[in-house]
Length: 130
Length: 303
Image (tube, rainbow over the protein chains, first blue to last red):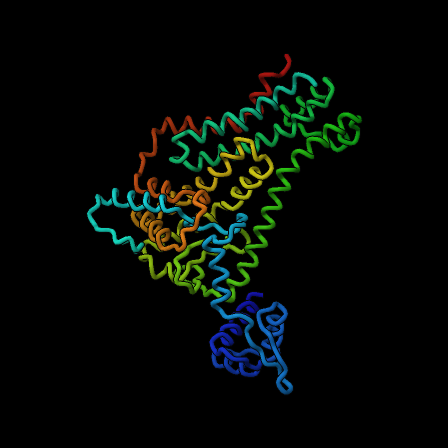
């Protein structure tokens, strides 16, 4: 199962990098530069990705042309929405290092940090810390 | 109705009202967050037990209620045969207890399964979009906004955005990662789910109301403490500051989420671990609370 997951990522990586539709043959040839992988395996996994809604495909001659449904950035943006807690309906799904923070809290953080350092360094407030 | 009602009633008042009221005001709670968490958990369990017993003792006749009290104090659960031969009223009381217990239990399970579903979906996308960094032992997500979080439970992993990797120094990043690993190792998501479930089922109860906001913050503090075993106070505090200030937009619901300012102050001003005697006493107090059902029960036990 783990290998299958890796292969899914490898296929998506290539299609995202190429930014154009590609056949299973092209994908297999590219993966084969690094390691051996069977054509039928890639075909099966591409079909799984299609059923999961990650890839769309259309017939071109006798082969399928596969294309990503959404860009990597769009998926990442969705994950970051979860990560930053922007969506309000939050079950105990993710545990974040910092929750959404108010301006007063931010000022208090700033003050606490300055106090601890004896205020010896001017704090630019760019969040870079030290 | 009989005098055995007093036992669960006393326990409910103690765990649902008095102890939460005390712990929320206690200064030691934030200094020894794990002990405070144990007290909250004990209160939750005690209150659930009391809430289940209360209606049963109200319904039962004197004699059967006496037998029930007997069973509880001697820790002798009823045999299946005994359960089958309950008379009508006893059966009613028994199902009443189960019903009351099932409310928080169902809410807890519902929350866990919903969270697991969210996490599984999140992890599924993450697996294809993120890349695992063996040096960090974390999944890196390509985004300029700094974020560090973890997926606890079955699909456990720590995730950092590339923005966080660039913003934080290696020491700060290590501190933030150690904090997240502490969440995963401590299975903190279970306590969060339990606190949420209690708050949903008993919205007006002081235990649920105070616990719902105190428990997440205490969990953050416990994770901070554990991270501090592996990093410096300065690294953790500045990581907290950098990640908090790097966030846009600072949206309106300020009340949501554990207070980062409280945590920061706590990280930066190391407190002396307290007098050993004091800590011992607190531990005994927590243990006594867990035993409260027994103690209260024995006191009201008919001679």
